[in-house]
Image 1 (cartoon, one colour):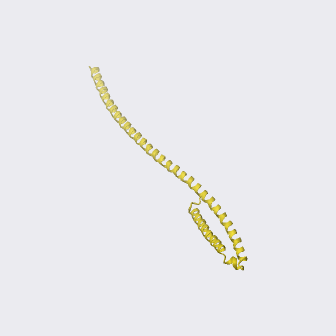
Image 2 (cartoon, one colour; image 1 turned 45 degrees about the vertical axis):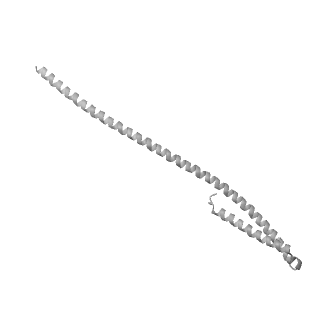
Image 3 (cartoon, one colour; image 1 turned 90 degrees about the vertical axis):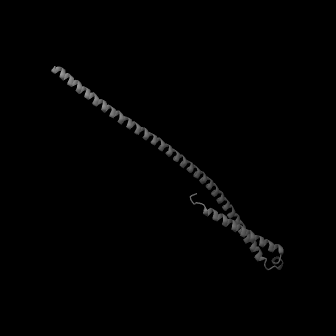
Length: 153
């Protein structure tokens, strides 16, 4: 009988232990589900963050490409303006030399009243003055344009 009581007591203890272990198992399963749910939420958040980051990165890369394209166009325009400025500068120097030569010739012939009052001579001198004014204006305009461009080119 004592043996039966002992067995009954052990059986009761074992049953209590099984119930406790089942409770612990349920708690652990609940904790596991909570952790899995948290992991899924974090993975979703990470995926969303990566998507936003990739979109932002793509937008920045597009802006960089656009700016690089603008820089190339600006460099080409600057080079063209520089070449035109040099060409016009050379033309100005040539015209100044020609005008100086013409003025010297006019100065030598100032004593001759026929040349001094000649209509053709006055028209040519007037034309030269207008040409110089126009050329100076064009050169000033080109110079101001090239100075307004960034100097990093």
